[in-house]
Amino acid sequence: MIPSDPKQVKQICFDRIDIPDVNTLAVARKHGAYAFLPTVLKEFTAAKIVDEMKLSGLRGRGGAGFPTGLKWSFVPRNTGKPTYLLCNADEGEPGTFKDRDIMRFDPHLLIEGMIMAGFALNVRDAYIYVRGEFLHEANVMNEAIREAYAANLLGENILGSGYSMHLTVHRGAGAYICGEETALIESLEGKPGRPRFKPPFPAVEGFYRCPTVVNNVETLATVPAILEHGGAWHAAIGVPNNTGCKIFSVSGHVNKPGNYEVPMGTSLKTLIEEYCGGLQHGSVPKVVIPGGSSTPWLTAEHYEAPLTYDGMIKAGSMLGSGAIIVMDETADLIAVTRRLAHFYAHESCGQCTPCREGTGWLERIMIRVENGQACAEDIQVLSDAATHMAGRTICALADGAAAPILSMLKHFPDEVRARALGKAA
Amino acid sequence: MSAAVSINSHRFSEARLAEIAELVKRYPGAQSALMPVLYMAQEDFGYLSMDVQQHVADVLGLRLMQVREVVTFYTMFREKPCGTYLLEVCTNAGCMLNGANELVAHMCETLGIKVGETTDDGLFTVAEVECAGACGGAPVVQVNHTYHEKVTPETMDALITQMRADGGAV
Ligand SMILES: NC(=O)C1=CN([C@@H]2O[C@H](COP(=O)(O)OP(=O)(O)OC[C@H]3O[C@@H](n4cnc5c(N)ncnc54)[C@H](O)[C@@H]3O)[C@@H](O)[C@H]2O)C=CC1
Ligand SMILES: Cc1cc2nc3c(=O)[nH]c(=O)nc-3n(C[C@H](O)[C@H](O)[C@H](O)COP(=O)(O)O)c2cc1C
Ligand code: SF4
Ligand code: FES
Image 1 (cartoon, rainbow over the protein chains, first blue to last red):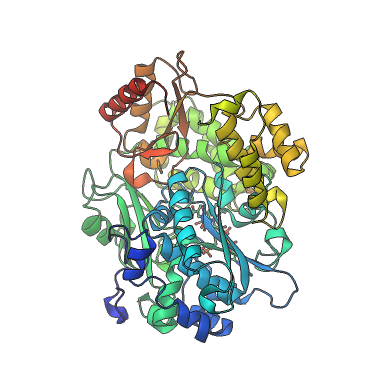
Image 2: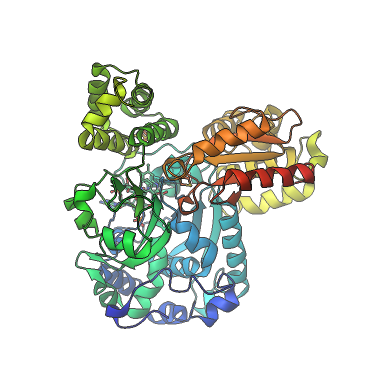
């Protein structure tokens, strides 16, 4: 059970995660699932829910950290059109694997969060867009949804409240770009996932051009705790402007990789040493990518930085989706960068020239750099191309593609030069 | 790759058509059902031949072009047959840092094929894929979309032996 004293809160989304069979409705209910839902449906107004969400300070866990309550408040009312709720479970950012655990271990938490969000936004049809590879997770979600329908937690007139909501799992099919919310919407409309220009933001014009809220799995899974304990309770966890707990997916050269949910503000060092069993080799990491492969790298200098949105910006990076990739002294940074360049070139949807062409160049030059077959000019082109791609495209994929290249050049210029020109071992 | 029965007819069964009719009702527009229907087609017919794509278009009232665009955009839709066991190794950063490249090399050597190829007996296809969203269990191999985590050359060999013994009955 989540403590009502915010000072004692260590976990929110993972509160029930270790309980055997909590994916089943019976066990989940024994441990508090849907207990507060009737109160929300009968006693809360939509305005009250949005106010509590604003008060909670919750920021979107998909990566951009946009305040959830504020986003919900932007949804126009009485447009005569339906409003849709889409859960973003595309989880494609290299390094990110947290939403998977919520879905496969505690699917009812996500369903409950979606019912509450749907009720606040007057949604009749909600969807969970799951990356195609997560077949098992989609099956677990579907089984949980089936149980929820049978218990009248979904469907018509939920628990006699007069509110009706339908929930459908929709599988993607192997395209990273479909995690970008407007690409996700295109994909859910049965089209290739090509991002749309924003604005208009989906809140105003999204799925089938109707008002649409897109939220990450972890964001929606936090809603039940906020409504049960109150926005002020959530705001007291973590640090101001960076409230609550956050799941960090830690991978790479640590002894105990995995998902760890900790209060915001925990330091990188504490997370790695106390939770992840330290590094495989050496005592300080060579590089830490703190928020997924699209975020700028940190080096040992920022090992003690607090894991918050603000803390990571201050350290020169971003909190992103909380996917921490740790590299110790044995890592071949140039090979990793080349591999990431390949990823972005492969995943570009191709509609913006700087991204389509730029990601291809970056990969081709990185192959030469890795193999020691580059010239000095190549390094300049790498830097220029990456610099000019960022911020000039429809979506943020191009910025993400530039981040590893620019980070590598910034932190390890000598290593890159030596390797590129064939002078390294 | 079940229901190989209909492999030559390339037409959905009546039961499937009923399922599709129900599915379409869950969305504001029929086109939204395209991806789930393509998955059904892939399951029923093995892969998405042009004939199958035309059938999907007809069933959903779409133009062939609308189906082709989607089939070619998404990597999990296949226009060609692949081995009974599709072995997809993630070689992105987290897995690479934990031996994924060495694992791929080992698998290719064991099976005598290159990445992207299928063994002569039609049993195994090896592919490199992007981050599977399970980096805590790196390196990750998906066998027909079942995840295997912290895979070593030894555990992979054992898995291959097991699959060979099963003789292709997925
Ligand atoms: N979880 C994952 O697997 C991945 C996460 N990301 C993350 O995604 C982030 C970028 O996401 P974007 O959606 O491009 O960021 P964004 O800043 O454009 O939007 C963030 C959210 O706030 C909403 N929003 C922003 N301004 C709004 C306004 N004025 N009115 C209404 N709604 C508004 C957007 O609709 C969106 O839902 C990156 O920071 C990266 O960390 C990137 C790749 C993969
Ligand atoms: C290239 C790209 C990929 C993205 N992939 C994901 C993703 O897999 N999951 C996710 O929740 N958000 C992803 N996002 C962010 C979404 O566009 C959006 O900001 C998020 O789903 C909003 O939910 P939140 O406010 O709850 O964070 C991605 C953004 C970009 C630019
Ligand atoms: S930036 Fe790249 S991925 Fe994004 S819309 Fe443009 S081409 Fe597509
Ligand atoms: S890097 Fe291999 S699963 Fe994420």
